[in-house]
Length: 119
Image (cartoon, helix red, strand yellow):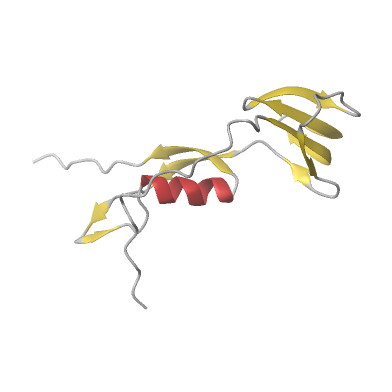
């Protein structure tokens, strides 16, 4: 089955600049030091509060995380985007690859670069 070529001229989607507050409510928060049932308030992409029954500004978008885990994003330290190898090239470019990564919970990538062999 042939793989279709990605549109390498694509640009990131426009986002609503007015929506910059988010409350994730009722989930089990998992950190490196343990877990707890809590709400998480995020403003301008920064976690501002973690706790129960948080007081947040009016108009904050709320996500019900009841019965779900709330975890920090993952880190992929060996990413192969736009890599040429043995006459082939990976399917994902930087934009589509990072878009797919974030959909799966990966928030940080480290590009893998092939080393040149010494003569």
